[in-house]
Image 1 (cartoon, rainbow, N blue to C red):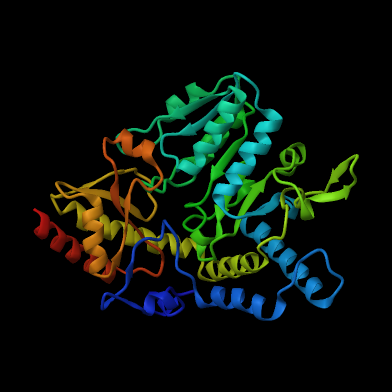
Image 2: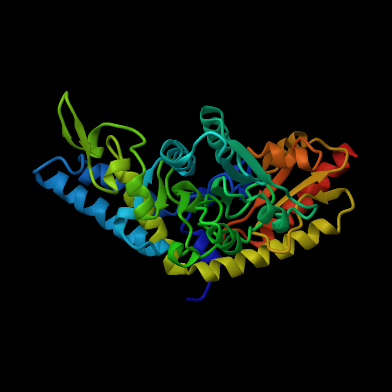
Length: 406
């Protein structure tokens, strides 16, 4: 397929609007992506014509909705290269997926004095669940340090693993710096010591080709809204053997097989971890989003986004007032930076008035901000519907901000 960004942009209704009388420039894709019309229409059509609870009805709509949902599970299984639909658990998003693993895996496998490894790059959602587990179980949280470029210290990582290490949990891509972590190597090192690995794929899924069987990760978590699907839907992939050993995370609804006041037995995978009514509309819209991505081609997307990253980085490096935080050799299409002498919130507010959406603050990654001695950054993050022309508009706006404050 020939990549035509102007044609692509027509698929996203949100890009047609103006902000403060100016054409919207949306550079906040790491926080959430915009949605193509096919995704919006799929969600709308479910509630217009197919709305029904799944797995529980003999009537036509219930059967249709159930079939559609399970077909979506099958498609997602194929999209990420899982071995079985039993390994595809629907959740609200990456945060719930990580909490599920921390709670359930932790209940089964973590004991006093055991160790859990995370990295200095992590989003709070991949720190706090493990901290809480460590407090509950009197376990130890160990942290992989980051160098000045924003890359993990892999030698330090190797030395952190001991006979008491029970799980490693790291991001595929840093939401704060854009660093693409060497997850293949991270998994290999952990597995050499028989330690399972969870990958936080919130940022990875929309920028990189993901095949969980080739990666051999034990868990991979991602959110729909980061990959052009609605908010409130996500996926936890887990190896079937591990999921079978883990106890239920929540109870009620589809996760049960039989209930009596004497004893309850639990459903088979994946339903054991899907208590209550699922977000069926979100699941179907997620399937549509993944089909949309596949039609374009994730390799095409990655190549185009790298062009945007290279172009924007070169422009910012020519501005002496700008200091880019995180200069990893392998980066996703995200740039985090500070303007010397200008608070990130002030700059972000002015950019907003100029029609440009960026993210300011610590990006739910305070430990990495502390590592670099700052309280936050301005962050621009690109998707395949962004353009070099938008980057030019942004750079001109940034020059206006600098003139105002310096």
